[in-house]
Amino acid sequence: MPAAPASVGFRLEDVDTPALVVDLDALEGNIARMAKALQGRSVRLRPHAKSHKCVQIARAQIAAGAIGVCAQKVSEAEALVAGGVADVLVTNEIVGKHKVERLSRLAREAKVAVLADDAGNVAELDSAARAEGVRLDVLAEIDVGALRCGAEPGAPAVALAKAIAGCRNLRFAGLHAYHGTAQHLRSPAERRAAIDAAAEKAMATKILIESEGLACETITGAGTGTFLLESESRVFNEIQPGSYVFMDADYNRNAWDEGWPHFEQSLFVLSAVMSVPSPDRAVVDAGLKASSVDSGMPLVRERPGVEYARASDEHGVLKIAAGAKAPRLGEKLLLVPGHCDPTVNLYDWLVCVRKRRVEALWPVSARGMLY
Image (tube, rainbow, N blue to C red):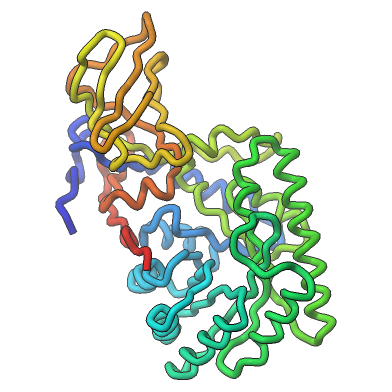
């Protein structure tokens, strides 16, 4: 591992930059809020680890009641299992000889499940599982509106479920019905309409599958933007929110129903002012290689009138409004990333602070695990 940008005991102001900083009070509060929100509900929590890629956070989520975690790639699952996580659902189609072989080998070390939306891939998974002497849980992914992966609900999904169930080394474990694009619909009414439609498709498909004599024990999906809707649907019995542990500028643009848990911003990019070339412009050392901008530019934390206006590889240009307090050369500023997941993947370490002191350094265990 590369050297960390700080040591335990450092003041926040002394952390080298750019650095990925986690406010531990906010992180722990978010994990507790999710657990409280699900009390008394008949859903299992399986948070998505692609948001944090960190074994320590996965363990904290499991300690707070999660049954396991989700991963998006085989290598991500491998890193989590190596760190002691015993139950991982790979919420993706895993295609290709080497990938399915690795997935099957991993199933000898932990409980592992995976998605499929194609009968040819089902046969490939069965062959690899047979060679490793394991039995893989496979969920049929259905497209409930995101227009990404997934078989069509109804008859195509039934055929897929029957193909999985007909394999000797696979077990049909249920349906994956995640509506990714619904997470960032801004109004609660829009999100509710999208999830109502998704739940209807999932339930209709479950009924058809069970009419063929197959058990459909799990319907899983949901994200930070909609998880209570899936929980209340009486269709989903497992949910997969991930970003709630950190939050980001994009999620913070959503409007929320009254009573929705308020998840705090816990993830920040610490940057330093490297140039103040004019009264209306400053430059920080956190550019495209320090914060993802696919969901918009970062926000400057608690600095009214200071806007992160544009980014290049190693520079972030700040626009300073007339009358605003201009940053000083060398001053450390906290940025709220636009999208937490790809920002985390840019770093080797999470610098964990409490009351502006470094309390822990956690490796981003699955950083770069894309294969």
